[in-house]
Image 1 (tube, rainbow, N blue to C red):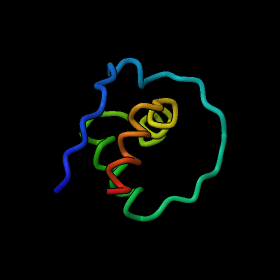
Image 2: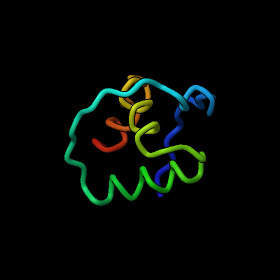
Image 3: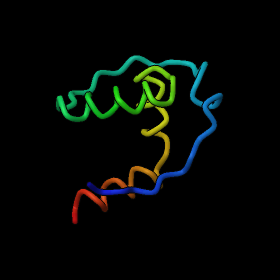
Image 4: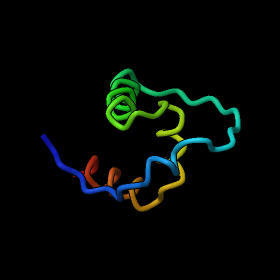
Length: 68
């Protein structure tokens, strides 16, 4: 198992954001991972996805880990 250190956002930050409709094709593994993390944080999958998309340092950390 790989441990990735990511910034810890405030849960309140992840709630109540305005939404923009977009369609993304994600693998079933990505959807499962988002689901597990969202349940753990007590937020919606969409809120988690929105936060990740806006968090460039976290995206870079994930990309580096995937490349290795």
